[in-house]
Length: 135
Image (tube, rainbow, N blue to C red; front, side):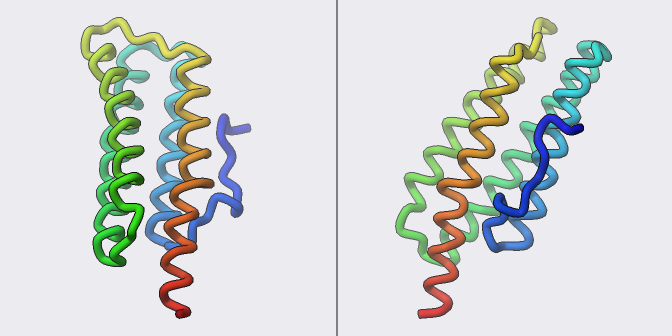
């Protein structure tokens, strides 16, 4: 059973964004598996770097949509993105020093932040776009 299981309730209404969110959760599951199988620092670090890169890619995609749709909460949403990127970049720096050990607490943070962000601000953006397109 995966660490994080994708649910349709996580869908925000943009296929592109939903597909990216599925990929992010897949990467988190791979990171969790690598850490808990004890497959070694190199594989855990590789999974973490993939998570960082793909997170930045997803956020960039979302932020382009904020501009395209003139989203009034763009700045607040982007601030959330930056705070998370700062946190995972700290983890990336630790991995670069060779002393990364992802605790259960860290994995729970990654999981909780991602799910809460998708269900909160990402869904809010999706609803804004739907209302705008209907109105």
